[in-house]
Image (cartoon, rainbow, N blue to C red; front, side):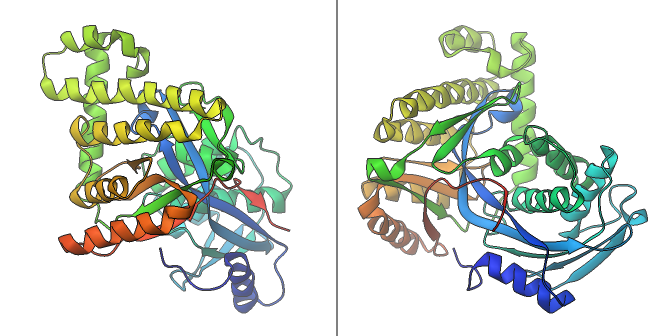
Length: 389
């Protein structure tokens, strides 16, 4: 995973000085995230278990007079300016600027007096890899504007506002997981999120104590038909819930699964339902193991999750399957695709001293198949959105 050189917080601060002169009032950071387990369970009102990455988006900012916001992006090199009239309704600010404008819009819609601001943005979170670069941007901007304006918004409410910015203003139908993880995760923990009532529990995930690491593998696979296929999976889940007479598939327990599947006529719907019901149980089982500090024992659950996504939910691609197979063959304790599917990333639970060996094995397997070389990064759970010193 390649990024611009130098510390991302320093790059944001230097970009601010170069663009605007002077020094920013402060710097606010929000991480990318990876989902340890719990895929396509969020919109089925189920359970997810993400953790924050050490990769961050940083906003250096200060106030400016009036209802005007000026934003420079390191990635594009562009500077955009928008005012209150420009964000009066979704669609007037487009491109990457829509994520920034959407946060301002959502805050104003919620009745908050958002201060005008100048911002410079730098990021280490790779785009298009399924690590929630958009949620990191929204959440860093939100943290900056809340502090600059002295605005009160509890951590419990911040994810919903950031999600509204993305859903309504940007027009991307994301669930609540990404923003919840990016804002509410803690270092050394995974975030156990109930997507029905949005309650959270911080679950210890002490990889160092177990002598383990998580290897994140960017498959570099182009997202193939992701939007249409994602929508199709969601429709199948909703159809299955309707046929079973439940509010959401979360309401079907794994002990009820065989009886539930017998009520469904369509084989494809049966496969989709089976994935969601068993995936929810895998999340609960993983949480139980982590509470007992049995980190090593979650490996088979991760691998079972991947098999379910591959065979029942049918959302993997050859690059993703190759990465999982190669990691397991090289000694990973477990490996799975993470994210919505049809591209994105794989995570592998590995012995800390063998992470490089596993990464090399995946890279070699890609070369044998003629795939673009993957990106790899060893990570530990990082903190959520925060103001930097």
